[in-house]
Length: 267
Ligand SMILES: Cc1cc2nc3c(=O)[nH]c(=O)nc-3n(C[C@H](O)[C@H](O)[C@H](O)COP(=O)(O)OP(=O)(O)OC[C@H]3O[C@@H](n4cnc5c(N)ncnc54)[C@H](O)[C@@H]3O)c2cc1C
Image (cartoon, rainbow, N blue to C red; front, side, top):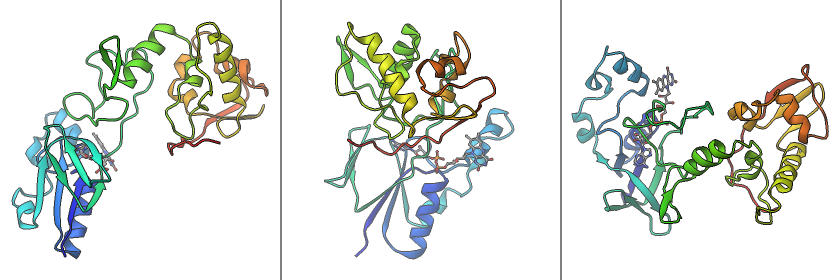
């Protein structure tokens, strides 16, 4: 019996997947994208910016291709997936049931921690008007004093900007394996300084997060992503030496460990 296969994302991954499924089966296939009606070559985006090409020139398939291959296209933004009900919910308030779901929603661009990145108008190619994936960091679900915030607002717009204390990177936990450990007590005003220092010591001396040796230090990606935060008042080595039991110097070879985004667990 044909199944309904829903693919979120009409980029190269989603479309290649759809084409291969179609070659092998007569299943009902729906492809969803909130960005554009049809698949276009992302790699040609720069030529659009340069004025050498138009959107129409970047579409690898003619518009009739989708109908001919019975690939249904939906232009809407997925805001939630109900795995139990096998249902996805759209921004427009509608929903769609699936038998099998493929998530080919692309990656999130890395926004380097340069001063000013949070200013209005500064965007990556996939940001702003062109494209925005609704990452967990961008959803305004935190209600403080009647105002709605997202995690990015809090981390980059408030904590990093206003308090200018890189120790927050040892305290914020995004539930990934490479994050600092989730503290089993609340941060309180009275103890905050001691708690942040303690979090720094724990993070730097945990060899699954940072492997610090005098000749070679393999550091957490945080020290690369937020390098500027840690070097405002001295070198990176100075900062590491505040918390690491093993001290490093200007000759120490520094590299950065891959970030493990797998979900963390209680140990
Ligand atoms: C300017 C530029 C030049 C590049 N040049 C090269 C190159 O030369 N060589 C190379 O190998 N790579 C290059 N890349 C990278 C390449 O384009 C990407 O790696 C590739 O497009 C990723 O494909 P994807 O299908 O995984 O995701 P994407 O192409 O990012 O597609 C993701 C899809 O998911 C949809 N989506 C996401 N979230 C939702 C949601 N919540 N609801 C509905 N739809 C959603 C989006 O609308 C989009 O259709 C370039 C990228 C850019 C921007």
